[in-house]
Image (tube, rainbow over all chains, first blue to last red; front, side, top):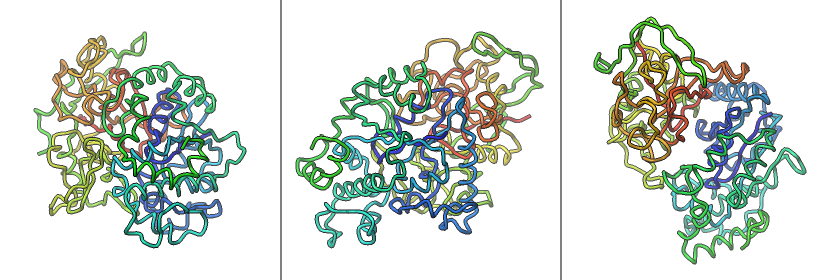
Length: 279
Length: 248
């Protein structure tokens, strides 16, 4: 068995994966595909179906790219050595619409999908400056102009791209990712999918951590209890720090203006509902 | 010259005790010289810029991920991002005739985001190699198995080492007190690739994971113990994984 921790950027997926890998018999690679292969960044919103999985080259887009193929081959070979006594998994933020393809790469894959209140996610996304960093303006507009697969309602006026601000672009990136995931993931009614609301986790970290490890067929380890105790009460470190108080995680939206908050709620109204967050 | 004798610790031939939980093991060594400091960005840059093999190909990194937000080695003559105050900030290009450059101010920080192959290639470039786990541990404990951490047995705090997000990133090499052998940053700053394949957790992964030792700037306290070992997939570098090297 393998596992994948998946969530939109700034949804606390790093924290969850660090918690999981504090167990000495579990490892978790941090964004092995997104951080190491540019195809997963530049084609973040491309849907990859299971029929696009091609043995030996993995995907038609990798044809005649032996260095990339070799990396993916090693990744697959390594992950497939996973056993109950030493469980191998990874965390990603850009595979929302490639899960059908990933299931072909790693057939025995469990998925932990992490969500955070969209207001806090977008606030953090904006604060860190991800729109420019990951070129979301271009990626979102390309998707809006070419996709016929997914509903993209909510953008103020798709025909006037220059009018979009960072918050609108962030919301659209969130919407495209989450809707892609909800509509195309191959785990419907499956016991191989676990949803984690980070707000539930913050209310009782130990209980939810125990549930996560049970999902991975492991008992919680003393190192994980220590990890939770050491990281829960104070906020310190940089943008990817594990040390975050619940208050800090839950109140990130305070960096948004009233107008921006209204904008997020308007564009992401269906995502608030589908992910069970109060508007 | 990247390394001279002042940069190296001489570990004498002999038998050394290494702590293993409640017990210990005896290791014999015929002697070696290990780098006193972690390999820095400016050291690694010399290797990277002199290599005829490209570091990136087909959109995939071979040795060091120069796009990672924590790397301080970036492509020359291109805009690049760095994290500052919790934000990703776009910086103007560093003009250079070489392919890569170090972000100013970080020349003396340990190199990170280097995978095991990149670490091994650097060592090979200098006619050196990566330490075995036992060699690393003998040097880290200064040959004294009573030294739980490189500085001894005192409880860690941020005056001894860089760990637990106390400094929000790497710190310049040699900033913290040396161990009894005169080596720096064995416990903390960045974890270090060793030459050994993992063999303790699951024989199935032993062809894929290499041992890493020492604590890291973003890792909790228990990683600082000299006997603590961990292993990582050799193809990935990390935000807090670097290296030091050994000469026979």
